[in-house]
Image 1 (cartoon, rainbow, N blue to C red):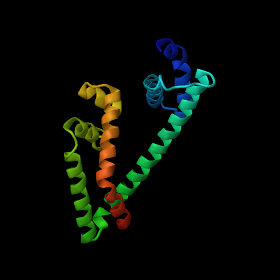
Image 2 (tube, rainbow, N blue to C red):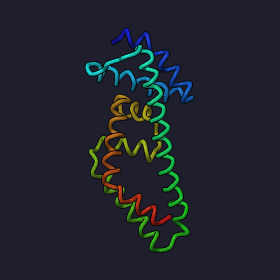
Image 3 (cartoon, helix red, strand yellow):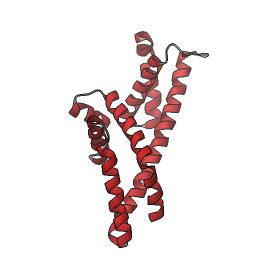
Image 4 (cartoon, helix red, strand yellow):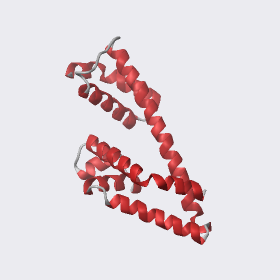
Length: 169
């Protein structure tokens, strides 16, 4: 596996960097591809060349990156408009916004301590995955795992809030 990594890493990174244009994100995508390759090595059946398979993996990881980025931006826009409109909102709307914030805080409080800290650093303090990993002295992958699991729990527990946000807009 190490030989495969050394032989293909640069090509995978270059392909990701050309599509993304951000070195850190391209490195993350490259790392994720090789981790996935390692984790799925027993079930993996490459029909063409391994290089072609890896470049296909880059294509799909980049698509997923842009898709999740678009979803985050859409949610940020909705919540930013809610915050901007907060001062102009009716008393009922302000009360609903306050209750929504309370619900979000309660849902965060139910997360395991480390996961809550990682989510808070990522979303509220807007720190990068690498910054969080460095500050907490944990691996980048552990940070990503905490964010993924935490956001999944929050989405499940707070799915009704997006409906309320829709009603407010």
